[in-house]
Image: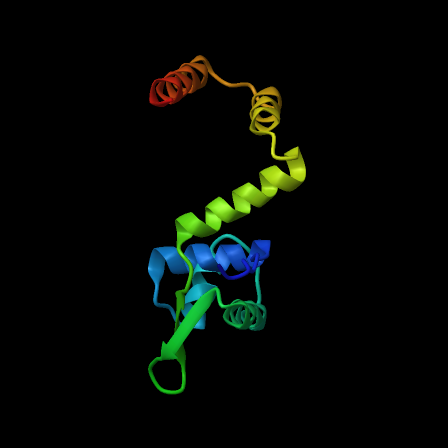
Length: 127
């Protein structure tokens, strides 16, 4: 197994664009990112280059002298690894601490609580 190269927050935003719209030119990635955040084109280009260096994106020749970029890692695997690392480092691998914190910091609706109960019942049946 290769070492997981953790993407930064900005790099993760680029991966989200690619998972939804790949392959993309840097110009296309920048346009998608600019809909929600004020980001410069050269900043987007640099972040895409970092993702390429980390092995998280792949590129192929595009029109003219441009390149088309695609995610080289799956969305599910990346999110799972980021989540696992978050739980490990923030909650010392305690899923119950994570859940208690999540439920304690918000006000879950009755529908949310019911959905959580259903989920827990399904987990108990599977075990």
